[in-house]
Length: 316
Image (cartoon, rainbow, N blue to C red; front, side, top):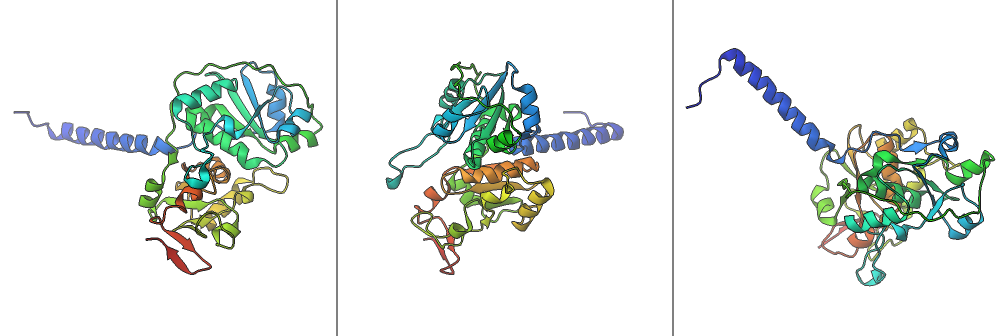
């Protein structure tokens, strides 16, 4: 029989148990906690680090625009380079889905990314949400602390009359160890089971006309039951800089999001929602993406959709 502990030892053991439980809970909570590193860099920072040997600079935008001019050393990246799409999406296939880890690793290596890379993503013209999709993908791949978005994008760089180039850098493949996937992508079943769960807030990142059911965003009009509207275009100012933290906090507060709450976003196909998640991550919120988004949800009649114009809930 195991001997009883003296009272003073018992108190110490209980204290250790409490600390152990707190540590366990903290570790569990950190499943979805975003990287602590800054999610944006300034044009000044980039100019000072442009020749760093480990820098990988990715241009997201129109190919013709890139070919005409881009930030020196930048490589062009298309969303098809870092995602999987079933082109028969009209008959059930989904666009812009996250690749399997091994495939994603190979795709990132093809962009020149290695274990020691510092990856900076920027948007050409107004391609903000495609750029945040790339940043989100890097975070999913476990590279969130080693990647960031150039605040203001190409327009900010050009406004400051910084150097541009039409030269395409020589392709150089990177080398990555096995990815440590960050579990920040969820499916329809997860979303459906968490509707109404306190501290998990479902955000619709599409334009309000889709959320309100004015225009069709799929086979059914409206939005996922319980979702709040925060159009992705609201996270940036008129110069396409990320809004200040106080402004972003107000946006999320209007959607019912409090400090420490988890933001779960969706949109049409999983692109615009990543801009909302980028803003949430900048504020320190845990974030999750419903990658199938409304393209998947609206096709499944058993999943609940709210149509404000019809004034009813659509589900079987």
